Length: 539
Image (cartoon, rainbow, N blue to C red; front, side, top):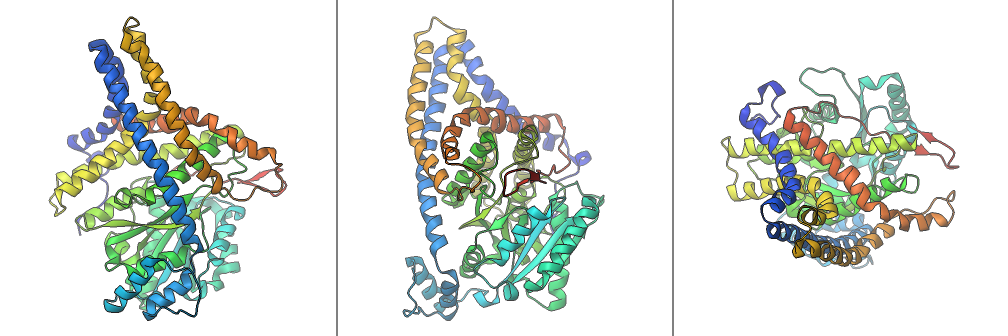
């Protein structure tokens, strides 16, 4: 099998290093471009800034429209009676006596599968739910298991529970896992606790090594039980990830209508709303913004990638040797790992059902602010995939269509560069020409033009704010009605958090890559829980 791993630091030759430098070099160059162009020709600078602003405005309008569409589809899918739809999918018959909502695509799927069956029937599907934990408390872990059991699905027949925990988590972690296995293990088809050894040679400290070790244990179990891995779908969850009650039914449905499930992975909507009422306002803005963006991504399957909680068939995981053990962004990297393993024959299908996660919350306000930056630093370190994709795609023999490869590569590169440059360019670039050439009419008019365009964009963004409110969980009784007002006023933080968190984290990660200061450790985001009286936090 082709070596899919990221090269060790000492094995990264000059070409690989230049490709690692590329995202950061582009980001810093574009940020300096208003200054450079203003020194060369003030009109060129104005044209560049206006063009960038208009492109961003059009993209923002598209995001607003996609957000409304995605929200509508998500709500529709949450209302569907997935168990009945699965029965009809398997029998090939629509039971008119059962009065439920049936989308048109369901009739099409039933007819198609009746004529040409796919490899797996709904009754044959087995879900392996892999919960990765390090030092999270029972107050964080237990609700996750309870949410799986509360699913509109049969865990006793069709769900395997795997608690993948770290040896370096210590005795407390092991005790928590044993308590949970004793309490909940017999409620599943099968349950196992897998302890990942610390200091494993060839691995960085991260989630990838943990879930890969657990995945290999699952493979051995399936071999002993003679269970075809094509029947098994693996969903990876962090300790605080709670699937919607319809998630497993919807995932089973999509998996069973897929003619070639080995070459597909599946991405639910990630919603950071478990504790949204408890976190500080800047964290609420970031969390709801990311939730909204994940809704939008489901409407753009051609750019959808694995992120956070995701699902993939066990056979595909076996053929890719599971996840990478050398990167802190094993989730997003898994898309590229599978893409190259199957010579480009890999797609991500959206699951329009949420998996609810915690927003960042630590024991104190200051620690929470720091933890948020650390989380975003880890996410933005996905820029490390640029060198991996370019090396495997353009400099190693493969059968991937070059047009598809180029398209995906430039989307990857552009996405990380935009992550770094958008907030500062939108906030400050309009003032650069007038600072350098205060006599220029175009330079003086530019800030006014930019402010008008931003006002129009702000009006359009109200649709996104509306969706953010609609996706909030019920307000806890411990909060009074004025908390709703704060939920509106919090959006004044948007420009600030964009600069201090989104952009700075991306620039930080890309700059570290430029200089070879690699992030070689997965910094786990602290998971704190506010008790029902709002009097304290348990980590």
